[in-house]
Picture 1 (tube, helix red, strand yellow):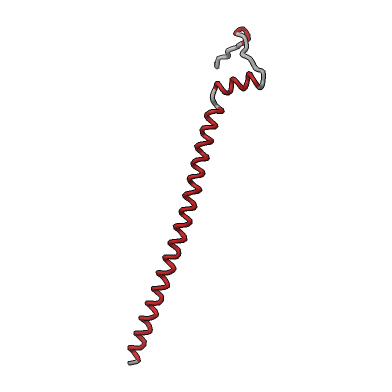
Picture 2 (cartoon, rainbow, N blue to C red):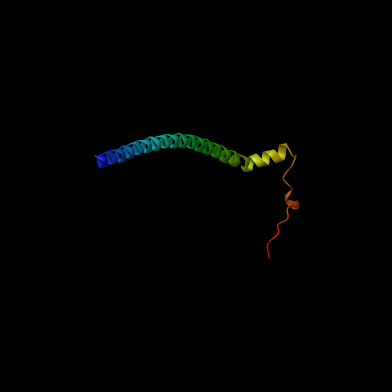
Length: 90
């Protein structure tokens, strides 16, 4: 009878330990899912910002935009053909 009691206690301990392990694993799974959702939202925001920055860079690098800023803000003009010097690489 003593051996049966020991086996019962060992089995009960294993069941309780297994149950606690399942509860902990589910908790960690839920926590990881919430963290994943937050990181996906952050990723989406970063991708949107990157797209906006690429559009802004393309607009700022446009030759027409640069030329209009040079004329309007800096008062620059194209030089006369006689003032243009072409230097060739030896």
